[in-house]
Length: 607
Image 1 (cartoon, rainbow, N blue to C red):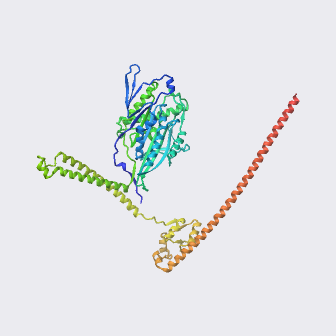
Image 2 (cartoon, rainbow, N blue to C red):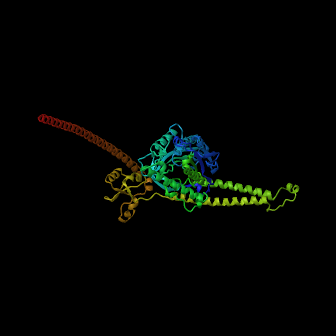
Image 3 (tube, rainbow, N blue to C red):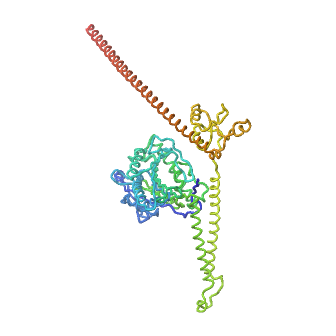
């Protein structure tokens, strides 16, 4: 019996949760120090502002959840908020962590680390996910990873670069990339090896601002599927995805001095990031609630389509904005900080992605209904006590009105009315699901095997076990359960008829009527004949098996002989080829010698 699966979260409105925004300020590099660049930005806990060099006045103040200065390492950035987002993924929430900023601001360094042993956020998150899933005492987890790259608005599979059949498709769970390679991992080292393998295939290049600049957006995904320990079916399953997004940085052509292909890459990167800014602006204009927006341009870029669920959707999202504090990039720094300020106003509705079968969902509704009824009965008891105090209280307490209009009883009755309405709603929902469940079960129980009037010869053995006999059209009689007849029909590629096909012909043409299976079962002679017939069938089947084995041996020996002849013929061809090459080489050498001798004679004659 097939039990359909539905999402529980359809009926429960999830609470809103604002996007978490962090700022990371990188230190000045050697090139900027040699040029004499200055840092006019000042940092305070959760606040950063700019100082006017001429007057020392404070301006352009921004407040965020966390601000990490130039001396903070990646481990501190991860432990502040990112570790909590990763832990929510293990609990069943979708989560996204991505970095945003201009080129050479430290995005790839933050996400992927460096060669000096500094681990990035992706590596730390992968280790934490593996450790938490293995330490869980209540859930069994299955981990899968995939690595997607968006280069010049085209999807690329970093785990399998030869895989070109990729497409973004809108599904019930969000936007997914169909055809993307997804690999199940069995150890944390295997997970890190796949991350390193995909990073080697990523598109990078050198520009005027960065020696190794990312020329594409990369999304590393960790898929988690969890079930309660000891569960073998699909009654209750939680699916969650952790997206670690390393965006390419916005850039100006006058600063990067890009030409040719690098210039085209920069224009495509800026286009996708501009679309991301438009999406953030549209969401901020409607108060962060995407349900109130008239139009949000998610489909104008592949990047925003992938981030659809993370921006105003049902995922937990962390944005890390990396900025460059030097005065020569002041405009880009202000643009990034303004982007972060708008992103902070966006509201998500995170929910646990759990799937329940109808049977388990009905049980859950029933338990919740019992709890609601118990709470209503408790409220009614409280209301009765509030309205009718005990006799001792009536004697000792001064005139307390014995009416149901007191404030306490009014609040209790209002709460009881609210719970009764909720119970009625739950009963309606439970009745609908019970009706659907019973209808499906009844339809499945009523289903009968389809009556086959014409069948393939391959299924004759199964039909013979059900009591079906073979009708010989040439002799106009029923042949009975003869294995030899069945084998002959199968060899000829024919089709075998069931009794139901010729029931009318028997009656119309006066064909011999077959005895019923019940009559045959009662007659001892027929039973003995049936047993003998079955024994003969087994013997004939054994003979046929021996014949097939002999035929297979002969075929194998013939194939082996043909292969041996083919190999000998190839050896002869190789020898002829070697002899021909040797003859050609000898002829060429003789021709060279003749030409050289002729030239020497000509020189001596001239002298």
